[in-house]
Structure formats: structure tokens, C-alpha cells
Length: 254
Image (cartoon, rainbow, N blue to C red; front, side, top):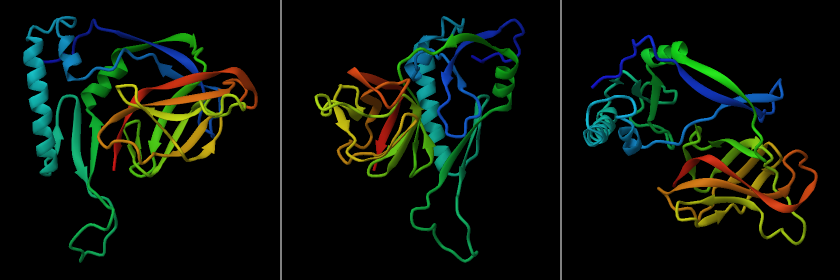
């Protein structure tokens, strides 16, 4: 089985919507966001084999992908540079040194650097057509979440450390009758929520919060903002609360 990057008759069409710009230094009022298909794990990828006319059994694909991923884990950790048709992966050792050190500085850890392959970048550049699909009408949007401890976007959050969330319509506010309902929550797959107790910055486009100690390391959480503020005017309070969910999950780590 192989992916054919040379096929000339395949053009992928990706719908994209305008979303209000969320970064402080934005020069224009909108960003463009692709309307992605649902997230796929290894099983989901394998299940698409028939759709894309891959003759290998989905069960075989799933088993092979899982085995390959596990092998790549070990090889990358052993210092090999991994090169595949889709990506390259290598370890980076951060820091500056005198030349006589015998160990990494406290808190300095090896980093995994992953980069899309030249073939994949070229395929996307040549074969993906973006179709503009109007303005995103959602009442609030969580665009990204930066773990300030690791510098990773939309991946992890370090318990007890600062998490910076960007988007629009994020300001958490309520009248007296709703004040106990609002906040920034971290919701796991069972629906159980943990509330952020410390929010250092609370504005329509930015929340800065401490990842709560009650989060379970290794568990993935969806971000949920419950507020009574208007997404169009953060200074005004609505009659009822509204909920904004992230379309990504963050894995808690200690």
C-alpha cells in the first residue's frame, strides 16, 4: 500500500469560514479557518481505507499504524532521525553550554521536533483548493490554547502552570443570579468538569488561567467557557448564559 502523491486528477476542496481575528496585533478584522472534518484517531484513519480505494484491509492498516507509531517512539527516543513520506522527526537538545557540562540544566528536557515532509507540503500546495464559505456565526470561539510551561499549542496543559487561551467572546462575566454558573471549565470524556480557580486575564479575546491541581494527569480535556457576557460586546451581559467549547482537547500533565 502506498499513497500516490503523483496523481494528477485529485483536487481536494476544503471549506473555510471567516472568524473574528483574536490576536492583539491583528491588522485586519478576520482570520480564515478551515472547516475540518471530525478528528480521526488511528482506528478512524484505517476505517477510511475503502473510501480512498485502498485495497488493504482496515484491520491490517490499523495494526500496522499502531506498530509503526510504537516503533517510531522508541527509535526517536534512541536518537534516530525519522524520515517518512509524511513527516520527519528528530530530537532537539535546548540550552547554551560552556562545553564542560555533564548533564542538562534543571528543567531543560529533550524536545521532539516534527516537520511535514516536502512531498506532503507540495501535495497540499498543488492539490488543495480553499472555498470561502462566509462568516462563522458561532457565538464565541476558542481558537487556540498555549501551555506556557512547554510552549505547545493545542496539545497539553501543565498542572499548576499558566494556560493562555485566545479566541473571541471569551470574557467571563455574570449578574448576581448566575455568578456561580460561569467560569472556565475543563471537561473530560465522561462529562466531569473541573473549574479554573485562578484566572489572571479575563478579556473578550484572551483568558490566562492556572491549570487546576484537580486535573488528572494523562486525561484529555475539552475547554468550556460558560459566560453571560455578549460575544459581540464583552461589556454587556445577556439574559442567559452561553457556552463555548474548544474543538480540540488538552492532555493534563504534571
